[in-house]
Image 1 (cartoon, helix red, strand yellow):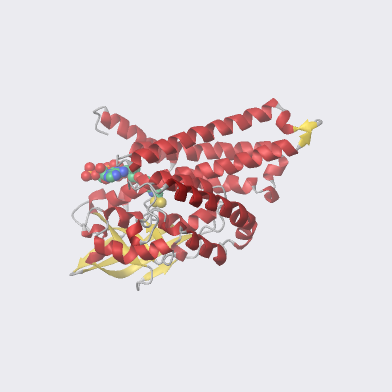
Image 2: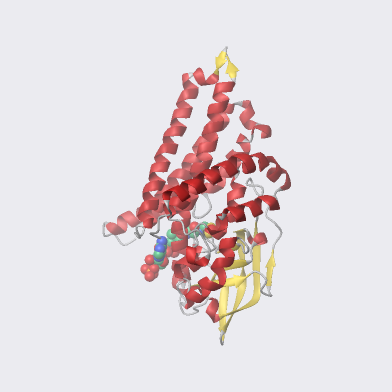
Length: 388
Ligand code: COS
């Protein structure tokens, strides 16, 4: 997308979101933790702010932000418990972008306006019990029967499945083609007969984020529901969506870095030991400095990658670098935040232990750190002429 939003309008949106995070989301964090859900009034406020439509082109009712702008907003939203971002995350990111990037005009017209308004929530169904990092090994089948495909299989850990109105489902439609080439991406309304949801997953953290299994049993969808109506292109669509998603997730990680550092600085100023605020001690200062350095580096990285993405370049390697760096950095920053808070960092009331658990997922979803390393190294070696 190359349409830069008018700078004043964008800055107004950004400051409105910052205020929304400070006055509505952060005060509701304990409620979300206790209820393991996002209050409907907050979801409605997110709709009204246009947050579901950030990445959807204006002609389909979205805000049509550039990747750079989206990343700046995610750095704001990421300052609150990650469950809030998760409500819009799949619709803004991996759930809708297959349609935006590779969909036909008819598919865009049918789905994007509803997604942009937040009336419909989309979810991305790639992972399976036997296929996580090795995404090309999925076994969910889509068998052609005239103008219909029948989908059978199970998808696992599907974020927002309990809230979804539509799934982007990767399934194996080309029987004669093994691996990535046999996969198509289907747009499947969540109320299609034959879809059943598993019980909500109990997780290490991110309470309020909803994930579960999705089972497909003879789910009949028209051939026209293949994204782009191009069978066998689903893996590439998924990879393009994930490239973009990894920049988005990097920005989310930076938001949480900012929050953890702010909490650490506040505590270092308030907490008195040995007769002075602990921030006066150089060993505490060193931890703050290391965290701030990583935040500044991460911001520069995400800004550069997002700008290259907006200029139309393929940024698979750089997106993987930024996801790898920022998700690992937020893990280190969360660990230092616990350390700076001492015993309080281990206690639920201070929220730091909660964020420590919440950010652990950032190193795993949308491609683990090890997958990012593989993407980075393989692309370096391929550029050097080695077939890997
Ligand atoms: N953009 C466009 N096309 C891409 C691509 C990208 N970023 N990455 C790969 N492709 C294409 C390749 O060019 C190749 O096409 P050709 O056969 O026409 O050359 C095809 O897709 C297969 O690529 P590759 O051989 O690299 O696939 P692999 O099976 O080796 O898988 C990884 C590559 C590991 C990178 C992939 O499986 C992956 O990203 N795994 C992690 C999945 C993930 O993030 N899961 C999280 C859950 S979803 S929230």
